[in-house]
Image (cartoon, rainbow over all chains, first blue to last red):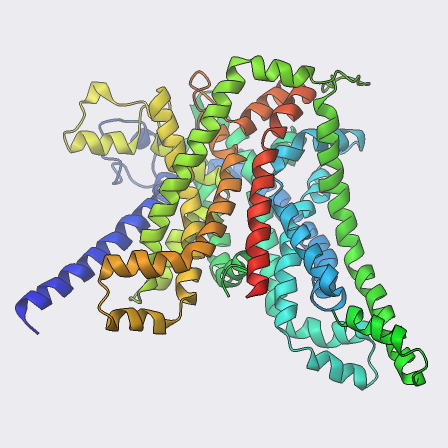
Length: 283
Length: 318
């Protein structure tokens, strides 16, 4: 290899590393910033002359203590988990059979129907929140977490049905047919054969649904006004900010704690999730 | 599919052996089972997406408010008053600027990033995790991180710029307080949020291009740019459409970033249709007018749906 070639190759890999680094810095910096702010003393944060990248005063756990002792943050985390679990159950109960039916039982008609169901995922909360706010009020569910339990499956079911349809289609039909020849009914084959081998797909749906619930903002902001009933994604921006007074340390701690653990979990499933998004375009 | 093929066969061969009709019955009951399994999901979607949608149409031609007990039909009055109002026009313009600029930026950056991530390198798993963070974390919470980064007094960006000698201490830009800067900030944060999704979608597309095609092009002596524009980009086109489609829907209809960062300010310069609908309908209590504003989002969704259907149909044919 000549010197020029070597220099060229070195330059190319240098450019590659630099590109990756710049992008990673852009995407991850706010989270790094949340983390470092969490442990800084307020006096350190509130001084313009201080270098914000280092600890100018010793690190502190005060902000975490304030967050959990003096605010409803713990309650919001609990609310989010509670709504998340119930919505996951409802989504599974409705989307698993629906996905299977679309994959195996409804034939040509089902294909159109599947696309139709998927399209409802594209109908945004910002189009529906106004009429739904009235519906929720008429049902007497304002300020109740049940309002979220009722409404959230409307966006988790469409996408999860679509995802599951893809998973079920990938399973060879011979397996169920063999079971049915052995005297199993179609429903029995579905429960005893298909569901056990689809655990990975079902788990993806669980994670995906749970993430969507933690992210949802517009409905929770609209339906709920009592502090103790908020989910974490609405509670932090509305109730930890009092007028113009920002408790940056606690605020950043609250953001970081609710963001990163679920992101780690999600990372294991992202490929399946993307497969669901791109079905139809990649062939 | 099998049911529809079997049905005419059954009709023709009425006189055939009993076996045939038994099979037909079985298939019929399977069809019935299919509808039974999918019925609840469809019912749920109809009740919680279809019904509110028609309710939104109905509200938009009524005079309903949050406190009112009854509502009257008022025709197109709401639409007239919206179209005549200055802040609706501003919001409409802002929505398009916000969506178009962030879509173009996201697409270009995602393309670059996907190409960079396509290569194998050490620590790729960690890098991918860090790049996905903005997409997975709750949007409102990630945006609060930016609120602190862009703070008017303690912004780390300003501190860094000052340390580099680019701005003076008494002349720190107010990232969220000056109209053009505020729009720029809101777009940047939105790009930050959408970049991961667009990147992984494009990455999935890159991986689906067979290696032979790249090899053949290399043998034929195609250079980097020629390779990029004559091979990679055309082959990625369908999947880029998907990325743009989702990006467009998530951008046109989003209000979270704007709600957290600027609440539409300063002077409505970052107000978009979705946030205007919220402030009018929910905080202002004028449900009718809010519903009418939100309905302006619908034509876009319809366009997105049509594009998606065409992609799905083409994929089916091939």
